[in-house]
Length: 199
Image (cartoon, rainbow, N blue to C red; front, side, top):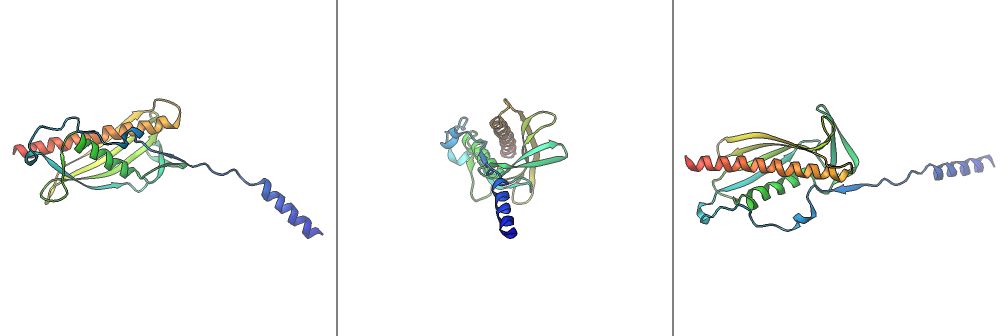
């Protein structure tokens, strides 16, 4: 009888101790309107054989940048949300943003082979920041290489403040920082290509 009462008591404890299911939410820094490609906004009017070209090489994320959205508590501390995830890894968003910035907006040709410069990028920041302001932050380390050497490199860091208290405002701020950071990388690429063509 005591054994039966113990089983019933344990069963009752398990019923009442069940926690509610964890709700996982997925986010994308790309607005839904970007589903369709847009024509180049500033494509140069030049014959195809005179158009500058670039190859996008490796886009690699830092180890802590995965599907979980990162929250930077201070310059020295980062944390991740366990229930707030990106729909794709950050490096995928960076590659698409670079493609838009280079090939759609600046009218460069995308090279797949041949002698041309290759752009490599390491994504070292793709996060929500708390201090000194609540913002979205993107940091890109980029290198332009030819077949023999690195011809140009740099670091672009962009922070865009959030426009509201909802978490969607954080995601939008990260998306805006992504657009600006990749645009600045693309401008650096265009300047280097122009410098090489003038020599």
